[in-house]
Image (cartoon, rainbow, N blue to C red; front, side, top):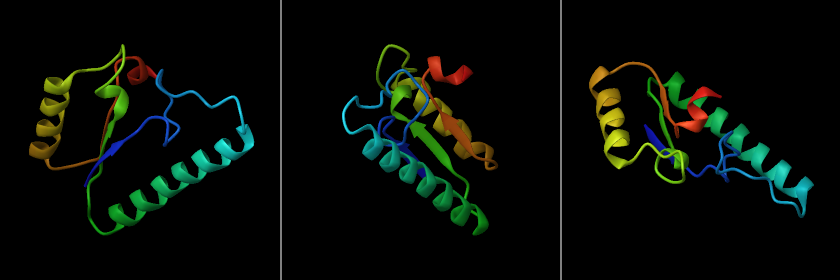
Length: 96
């Protein structure tokens, strides 16, 4: 299963994510629920034999993007290898 996640909506730890300065409690709760749902969905899919590939927005956009060619190559590699989960992240978030 391949997901393409927006860094803001999933509270990704990368340069593209910034918690809004207004209604902080609302946004913290909203984004934490999104992350919780991601974990729940991943667990369900894994338990039924699916592999998970998360392509993060920061891999495709922003100063630290990898670029479409590299992302496509990583997706191709993941598909061919046939095992394990993988995250494709921007260069700055790769070390976090």
